[in-house]
Image 1: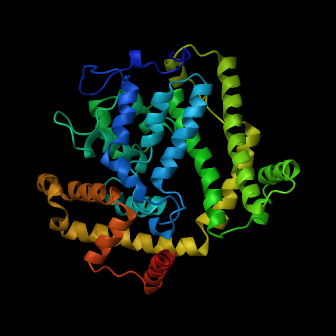
Image 2: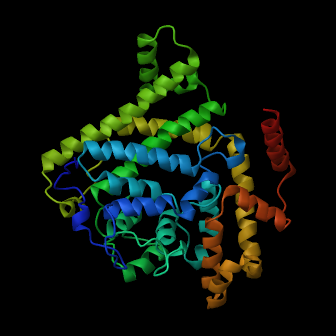
Image 3: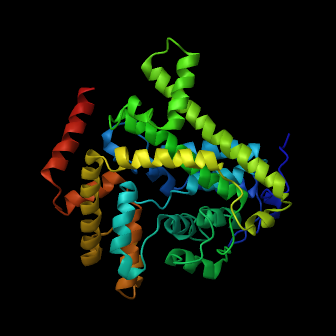
Length: 401
């Protein structure tokens, strides 16, 4: 039995279509086809070896961009179903939202954006759109995945309207296929965005604790987390520390999702939306945390920033990652013939240095962490002995275990 969706949900039967027309050939909806194309894309597979916070070789238990995207999609489906939205579209946007991420996480993005400033800059959200509209080149009749307007809109605007400082990749695509950057995105895209927040707040606490960057006692200094631990201690008096910590973070995970559902349900009901366009043209986002939860999450983000994202061991790896990306960019810009044969056609069509730099940027952005590192070795680019010893030590530990 097909689930009934709300009037304000995105209806696949009323989709604005694809840039290149396709006849419906099977029993899947257009949003299901989008999701499936994303899962089978090369860029999605590469997320397996792209950093979330820790570099890929640091341990098999830490999140990567792939596991992060899967967790975001799980949260997004749950919220979307409860809000009577289209969970297929929500899942497609959630799975694709990080396809444009560079190697080495936000560190790679920061340095690539800096290097690309003279040539228009770099933005991973815009790059995600470029991946699915151009860089994935597998189909006979078009470049990209030829996704629906609704999925592309969600990728471009899931963080809100794009009005100022519009990235070049977005502007170029919008000239061919107007994604209406001035409006909010659908409620499905808003769910994908807030699910990203829920997922990383949860798993970064898990990963930081496993890495020894902070302790359970440190986490209990945060009021919301302290309440979660107190509830677990009350309900499970004899639980061991490992299971108790997992249950406390699981409780936090559920609290975040429940808060979004209740807050958003109430807001949507109070306003009385009757169409997806009313959602888009509303003066604010409709999928949101309560004010109290938002304040609690700000404390968690501050805690993670100080104790995890700026921890000395993480900063060391960030510094070396920046060097690798910068040196690869300079090397390819100087010797583009070193790039693979599959990129040479595009390089031959580059009319100026701006075109060349953007092609180099696309190539580097698509790299996995380990491929970027192997290319640095191929170019004999210097990486500090401290970092090399650190990497070698991890590989030795893996062999021992």
